[in-house]
Length: 247
Image (tube, rainbow, N blue to C red; front, side, top):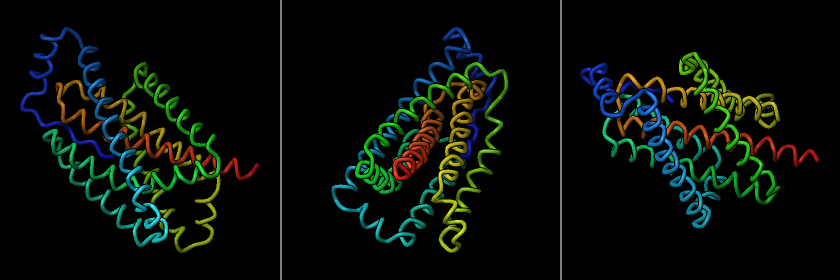
């Protein structure tokens, strides 16, 4: 997702004051990282709770049966919320509210994917969870030790995401595009795109240091990480479920 800079009147002064109180650059990075992970966990909890409610109430079956009639407007809502959040990093309450809306909109699709995975191959669901956890650890290490500003790869990640979206839309009308979307190659491409997003979003925690500590910034980055995790889980699940079907 796009990444607006926090608005502060004097970033250098904010950083200097924080360093004077907390001692080092790493203390700022550590505090922002901890806050970001808390918000990410909160968003994921909302998505999981929404998926459970969707399953119990039958909303997921309505979404599955309606197909593009429901799914495309859902993507429209996600795009609208992303645009509202991209204007600036504002109050924590606004970030949490918009993020919660986005998680609840995604939750029926998440419910459909998990229910399908558990019915087809429960091991694929657990393998996808382990793969996402491993991805978080590996990308966090890469972002921490890299001497380069990996957040600059955000433009490349956006190009990949646009390619995924355009291909999915074309798959509604063109058989070759549908064949690609249903293939393991598509799952690998999706995994690569959101692995890249994961690296970018984690790297942004380091690059936000000149702007001083801010809870709303942590909430915003946490939402980006939550979206990365959910999408990675879905693509890993599709990959592993495809492997199970081939066996």
